Image (cartoon, rainbow, N blue to C red; front, side, top):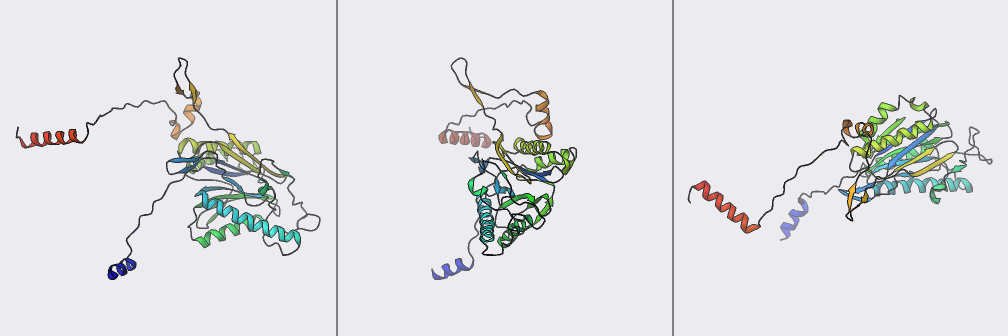
Length: 330
């Protein structure tokens, strides 16, 4: 018995890890001469094939002027966001009290201006933003990216966190966007889409972002494009859905809106006392434009056939009858 235990310790039996697929569609782009950052995300959280939450928040504040959209394992994303937020809140508190150097936060003088002479305080903060997010101090965009990248590299890719990190950097007076992956690799881009619905969203961004002027587009055009990209991911991915949230970050402050696009719901309709489900009629142009290659929402019919089994005894009789017919013994 001791030999068997020793063998098991030296050669443990292989364990098959049970993985669960997750679904998300997040998009981000810069607009208005690269001075405004727009983030958009769906609100569906899945646990395998189960919708765990239809109102999940996927847009998070890392600092007062830096936000991120998270895809992947929700627990890993939330833990990483809280760690980054607390780290820069602590550094901002030390800077305010004069107890430390404020490493990673923008250095400011007594009148609230940074080294470039530009006011750091973002006066406009949306009332719908949580209190803890409104109290987070402003931070340097490169410092936040460096901190996030370092944390992910230390974990070796074990954290299932795919982030679109962006914000308004006061030093450069521009909006910046970076796609950060679980192993810590980072791509600095002007637009990006991640998640299980990211392919469909990327197709919308690649086809329409250059048409509206890329980084020189207006804020309204950028919001419309970001929302349409998320909706494309929702139409082509079962793991994405529910509502669409939008966050706009600019020099003046942050505007955060939930449920910009509300969830489509089926209405109960029954004129004769019964209950039935009906979907709202869609225009022909909209039907032809949505879905995979324009055929995702075309009406279709399914023919089904029911087979009733007689149970184990019936199956045994059928097997014996089949064997008798094969052997020729009647």
